[in-house]
Amino acid sequence: DAMVIQNPRYQVTQFGKPVTLSCSQTLNHNVMYWYQQKSSQAPKLLFHYYDKDFNNEADTPDNFQSRRPNTSFCFLDIRSPGLGDAAMYLCATTPGQGYNEQFFGPGTRLTVL
Amino acid sequence: GENVEQHPSTLSVQEGDSAVIKCTYSDSASNYFPWYKQELGKGPQLIIDIRSNVGEKKDQRIAVTLNKTAKHFSLHITETQPEDSAVYFCAASTSTRGNQFYFGTGTSLTVIP
Image 1 (cartoon, each protein chain N blue to C red):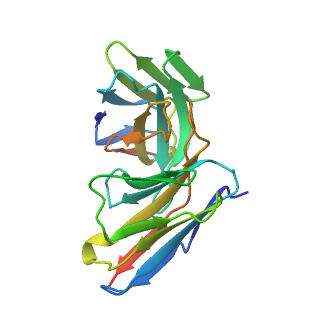
Image 2: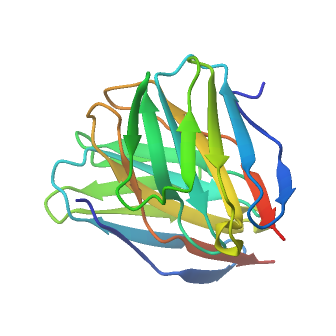
């Protein structure tokens, strides 16, 4: 019973070619997060949504955008991927304010050629 | 902002021995401390968590302790098994709107059969 689903699991794109990663959740959680994780490093928060309120991290490059059309879905758009954007991209959710468990999806491994 | 430090970065133990991973945090407002296990190519999975009103929590072979005064918390795995081999991340969070999670740098645990 997958609760946080990410598609695709593996994505290959070319340098500079826009790519969209997808996340959906069946938990009806208010908060959705996007993290970037490079090899042997901790997940790095890119941005998160509390309902429709978008919160961007100060050091997230403008190349990264996000959309949340409804409670269940959230998208990560990389407008012009560079070689340095190759990483695992993780989506996560929490219910909202309060003591919250964070549920992660399986991740999307992005390769940039 | 919050700063979470995690030690050691790598840990090797013999099967059946115990493993201990330690984290410190800087923000006294943090009140929720999860531990995640991440296997190769997968998203982090919550294995145990502790809230600031509790000093210790145990779940079978896994336990977590929290010292609020010293601002540190530890993961203890007893009777380690080869399937415990993975990367473990600690994190700290506050129960505020949006719940930002701050991750430690990870510990790569290897259990030698």
